[in-house]
Length: 218
Ligand code: SAM
Image 1 (tube, rainbow, N blue to C red):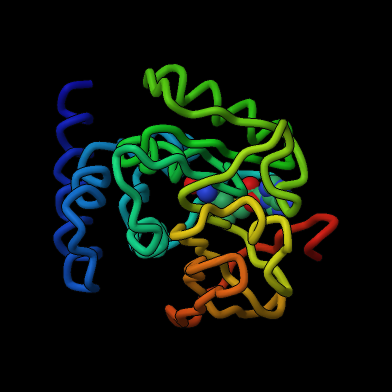
Image 2: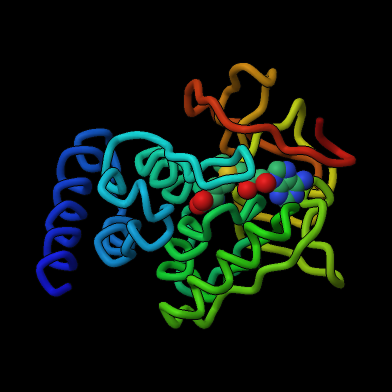
C-alpha cells in the first residue's frame, strides 16, 4: 500500500516535470495543485496504472477525465486567486474540481449525469475536500441554485457557442475558459470580461472535448 502510494507520487512528479512545465504551465499555485491531487483516485480501478499518462481516460457513461495538460492549461488561464470563487461545468470524475479547490476559495461544480456526480462526491468526501459544492443540473444555464456570480468559469465540455448565462454569471474582471466549435473539434477560448459590454476572446488552440448537452448547448 505504501509502495503503491509512493509509486503514484513519483509518477505525479514526473507528470508535472514532463507534461506540464515544458508546455508553459508555470503558475506556482497550479503546479502545487497538480503535485498534491492524487489523479489515480479519480480513475476507474482497471485504468489506475495509466493515471499519469499524457491523455484523457474513460470514466464511464461515455465521458472522460481530461488530459492533465489540458486541465492545467484551462485552470492556469482562469488566473484565480485564493479568494476566488469558481464555477466548473462538467464535474465528471471530480479531478478538476479537486485541482481547483487547492487554488480557489470555493468551487461550485455542475454535472448532468447523476451517477458521475454521486461518485465524484464520494471520492472528494473520502479525500476530505471541503470547499467543493456539486449540483446536478443543466450546466449550460450556469449555476442552477440561486443567484451567484463567479471570479472564473471553466467549462469542460464543448459548446456550439458561448452560452449567455456564463456572460451574466461572470464577475467583471473574471475569466471564462470554454471550448467552442463543432462536435468533432473546437477552439479553446479564454474570455475576459473587461466590462458588461466588452468580452475579450483569446484563442488558446485546438482541443477535442465531449459535447455540452443542454438548453444553451447541443
Ligand atoms: N472535469 C471533469 C473531470 O475532471 O473529470 C471532466 C469532464 S468531462 C470531459 C465532461 C463532463 O461534462 C461529463 O461528465 C458530462 O456529463 C458533463 N456535461 C455535459 N453536458 C453538461 C451539462 N449541460 N451540464 C453539466 N454537465 C455536463
